[in-house]
Length: 475
Image (cartoon, rainbow, N blue to C red; front, side):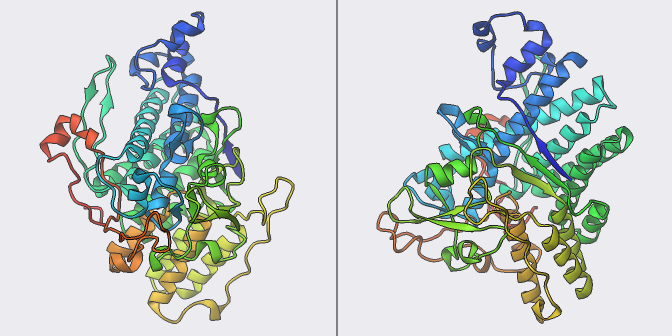
C-alpha cells in the first residue's frame, strides 16, 4: 500500500498569492511579494486557494523533514539528517565546525546549520497548521485536509524528539505580525500532537481518507510511545496494515525537490553512515542487513573519514519514508515487551521483518532489492531484559534508519529505560584517528538546542533565552 507524495517547487508566498487571484501578474511581480518564505493566512481566502496551499504545505514539510539540495537557500539539511548526526546514524566526514558541533554532541545555540534546520521545521509547522485550518474552514470533507493535519502533528513530534525542552510555537497573523509562542516542554508539545492526530483521524474517517487515517494512526502511536504510554500506542496502531507506506517523494527537477540525505552522503561526501560511533553507537555500516545495505565509498570530504554510503537513498529522487506499517508492528512489539509477553514480542518483530522495506546491494537503478531478513527464532530472543530491549531498539534503528526516529529512541532509552546517557550516546575521544579532528572528546548533548535567534521572541527571552533544560526526558 505505498503512498508517495509528489510536489512541485513552489515559493510559498508566490503560490498562495497566485491562488488568491494574482495569476495574471508577470513573473517578476510574483517574485517580489513580501515575505516570500511565509504563508500568510489572508492569502488562503477561499476554496480556490487550497490546491496551491496543499502543495506549499507538502513542500515545506519535505524541506523541514528531509532537506533540499541546490544553490543558496535550497541547500538545507532536514531534521532527519541533523538528528541522525547527533545520534549514531551519521558521522561528520568534512570540516564545517557547525556540523562537527552536532556530531560531537556539543552544539552551541549560535550555529548557522542548526538554525536553518530549526527554521525550516518551524516553517513546516506553521504552514501545515495554517493549511489544515483552511481545509477545515473551506473544504471540511476534502481528504487532503486530514492528510495535512496529520503532517502538522508530525512537525510537533519531530520538534519534541529532536530539541531540548522549551520549544516555542509562534503563529503568523493575517497582517503579517506574530503571536509569539511560549516555551513548551516535550510533554506539552507531544500532547498537542496527539490532539492533532485525533483530529486528523476523525476527519479522515468521516471523509473516507484511508491514507490520511493510517498516517495519523501511526503518528499518534509514535507520540504516545514518546509519552511513555506503550499500551495506548499499540492500540492506536492496531488496525494499520503492515504494508502501509507513506513516503515523501523527491524529484530531480529542482534542488529543493532533491533528496538531501543522498546529496550530503553521495555527492558531497560530508555525512557518512556511522559504525559503532563513539564505541556505543550501533554498527550500522557493518550490520550487513538487507534493510540498510552499505557501500564503502572511500575517504569522505575531509580526506580521512571512511565514507560509508547508504543504498536506501541512492539518488536525488529516492523517497524518504515518514510512516510505515512496519513501525506500527514495532510499536506493538514494544508494548508486548513492556508487558512481558515475549511470544507476541517475537511475532510482531517477525511481522515487521517480513514487511520491511529492503534495498539494493549496490544502489544501481536496475538492481533488485534484497530479500527480507529471516524471521527470528525463539533462540534469537535474548534471555535478559536488557538484551531484549537491545534487540527491539536495533530492529527499530534498522527499519527506521535515517527517518528521524533514532534520536528520540536514544532519548527514550535514557528516560524510559533508565539507562545512562553515556551508555547510549557516543562517548570518549572524537574521531581520534582523524588528524583534522583528533584532540577533542564527545560532549554531553542528548538533544539539539534552540537557536539563539529565538531570543527575538519576547516570551522566549523572558524565560532566559535558552532551553528550559537539556535533559533526555520530556519535562
